[in-house]
Length: 337
Image (tube, rainbow, N blue to C red; front, side, top):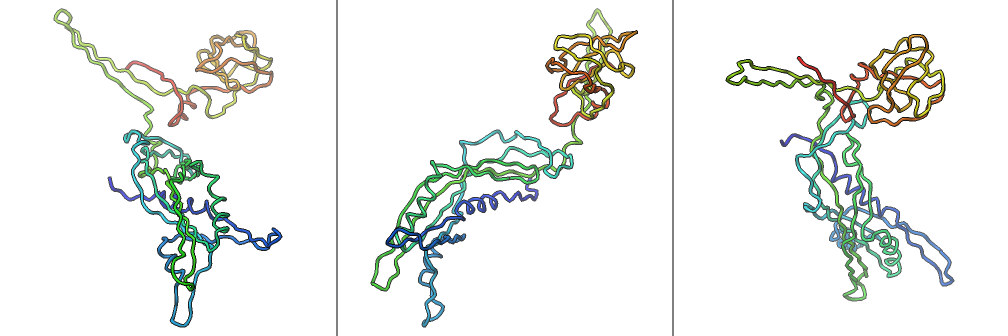
């Protein structure tokens, strides 16, 4: 507990929220209705109080430096735990590493939090304000889903709803004729994000591939013999993993055929499994005189299908058992020790 980790989830959510409003523009028209100018509305991360102070900022007593309107600013104002989205804290999931090196990483289920944001819009003209607001509101009904890669190590992407909670309006128009007017709209949002804990580096080496279970039974009064039995189980591949082609079909195979013809049956043994396309078959018997196999179709939850002549035949054998990975479906071979 309390080991160092930093998934940058809060940072990513703040940046993603800001990018939603990064391309807002307003247009000005003349008396004929023709567009005479287009202005992109600047966006910055700053509290409302800072922008209000800068509206009348002065570097010295002889020169007044003011920011130009329209402008927008946003800030992250708080966060709360969301119990309505709570999941089992001990539950965990596994995923392959995002860099594709074959390692498997593990993480516990995330904790749901709501992040509060405020988007402040400042304009001098009412028409500018209405243009900006009308470009934003139609997308929130009342939420807009934003896809964020929350944990880069496992490429965990989630759709984060950005919910519009409310709008307040303020017209800074009090004072004398020298006072500058500022229309201020404040839009309050809530981002329903998730916070992940540390990600385990590699758990692929921790896959259990053999289990020994021992039973010991004490004999009764009349039977003094004690029984000590140990079962061993190992994962068995249900399909081909290494794409080891051992032969090809010599004739078309129908869905109901139980005898199939190959170019050669020499490398195939009775009591083994083969795979043609996605169908797995069990080899019951080999022909002594022809290159034919008597098979049991649709094994290991596969579906019987038709196959054309010249299709590759794959072996499902011991080498595939070694390729059974975390999360794969597998059966078990059992035996006594």
